[in-house]
Amino acid sequence: MDLGVRDNGYLIVGGTAGMGFEAARALAADGARVAVAGRDRERAERAAEAIRTESGAEVVPIVADVSRGAAEAERVVAEATAAFGGLAGMAVTTGTSGLAHSTLEDATDAVWDEAVQDVLMSVVRTVKAVLPQFVERGSGSIVTTSAFSIHSPHANRMPYVALKGAIAVFTKNVAKTYGPSGVRANCVCPGAIETGGLAALRTQIATARGIPEEGVLERVMVEEWHMDVALGRPGRPDEVGDLFAFLLSSRAGYLTGALINIDGGTDF
Image 1 (cartoon, helix red, strand yellow):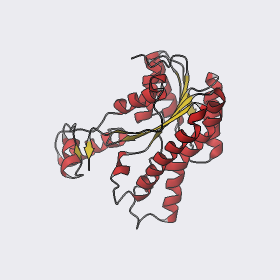
Image 2 (cartoon, rainbow, N blue to C red; image 1 turned 45 degrees about the vertical axis):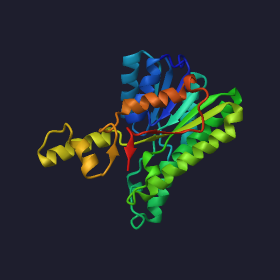
Image 3 (cartoon, helix red, strand yellow; image 1 turned 180 degrees about the vertical axis):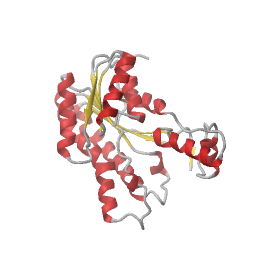
Image 4 (spheres, rainbow, N blue to C red; image 1 turned 120 degrees about the horizontal axis):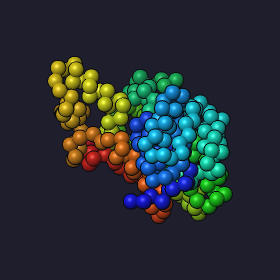
């Protein structure tokens, strides 16, 4: 399917790895111009070069940490806008603070403060920074990242789940508020996706138990994590990246304010 993104500019915050990287790849494959933003310069440059080599598209690496403040978010948007002369869409796939995965007892005020900045405010700041140009041009697509676990919160992940829930509500509010200006905003809720962390865990479990990697994570998901997944496996980053690319594109022109699960049919 032609996404209709050719020559349009897109910013993927968190686009240097995992789902964000795959979203950038999918857009670039259809001729989009893409900026991938992340905290690590080497990884950002490596990601941009990989996509550029594969697709021949214009890909710009941007190094920033949008959890640090509004100035960083504004700079990321400004750099991507300057590179392409404007943006047609932006996705935010960041927000995975390790401390956010804490019980209520362990989550001190300092833990909550860090989690708020990393998980929630990184999204709020970048969305706020990009909205003025979308309103001015009368169009633009925003995609944020929540989590399937907001539907069935885990007791030992209190800040993370609470703030991912806030992202879902925030995105719906953006869609309602800025829809009359032609802006679309949708929120994706991934389930267990085998990005770098989960892939590493597969290897760790297999090594510790002296068994093959194939199938080990799938068994742990059911037997130890008690996750009932209809497809019987974790998702792949490219499967989520394709969804992000579609939502950012004109093919999703009448889709806004949606909370979209991509979880393989997970039932907690």
